[in-house]
Image 1 (cartoon, helix red, strand yellow):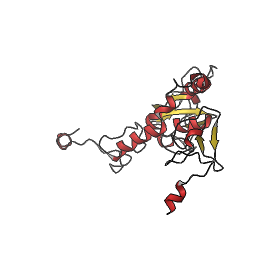
Image 2: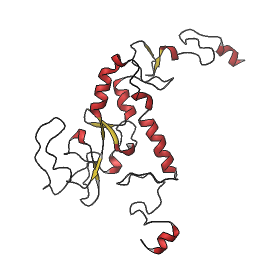
Image 3: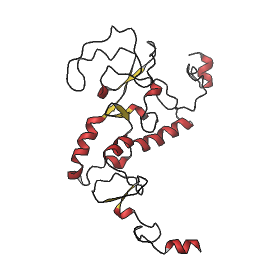
Image 4: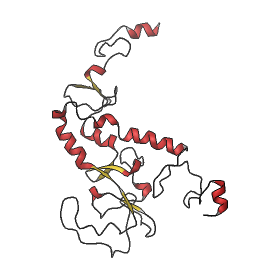
Length: 221
């Protein structure tokens, strides 16, 4: 780094965006730049993709035992490496032997199907096995299409999911409180929304919405 760069407090410009991104572009290292809009977006996505209450397993632990087991078995963190670097792994996630693949001359992204440049980092997901890799920009949740924050992913039925959508594929989520529903007693609307029974109510008087309350009439006056 030159003395001029040090004095101005700036490093080399990103070769991908030339310094024009908001701080959360899918660079290979995927680190949001502190103090930018990208840093705030990173924080919001981390909260949305991994809601803390989806991991509050102390409540109704007996009913949640199978969910917890599935959650832990599907959770992983992506590894950034050059194409072929991770292919020397000796075993896959199911324990079967896997021969080294480091002699391959080309690798394709499991997201877009395009060739991965041999001199640029890609992302590996050990739950998927090291025969698969992704461009950093393709390492996204297959439901919401958002970049997987900090490369935290869930692997289910051959696709990548964020924590929110993985959990919703196992249990319904209440539209009222945004928490997962573990009770078998819940309300489901025709539009596909789910509610805890106690949350399907008028927000003014608490009356269950299966029975019409007087609040609608008061608000219309």
